Image (cartoon, rainbow, N blue to C red; front, side):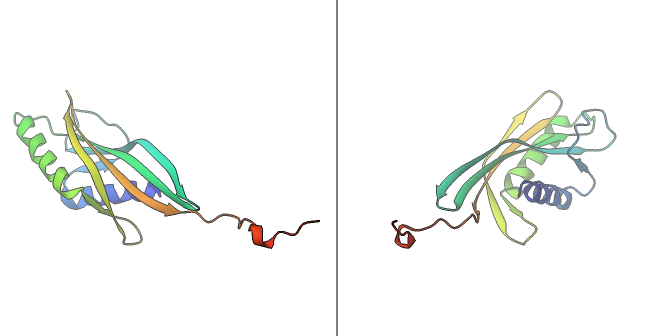
Length: 137
């Protein structure tokens, strides 16, 4: 599931910014083209009921712009696009998940965009024996 979410974010970024490099390895500032670094900050899973679980995945997208005099305007443009377009991502199976708590943070060398994706999953487990089926000895 986690790889599907990361792939969904990276696919969306490639659609939005075809000229940029996109990866999971921190390259930092000083590269010749725009670069997006994608990763997870935190994941959380809570049981809801029976075999149903709630998962929250906090993802980040770090944007390193080209070294230019228009750095602030470029970061603002990218932040505007990320706020609008990373609200929904498509998973491998065609389903959509929605990103909440989207926020941007300017750092010295990059724009750090944060988004939380929440989903409910169903885990199948061993069937427990019901009280009706138990026999006393």
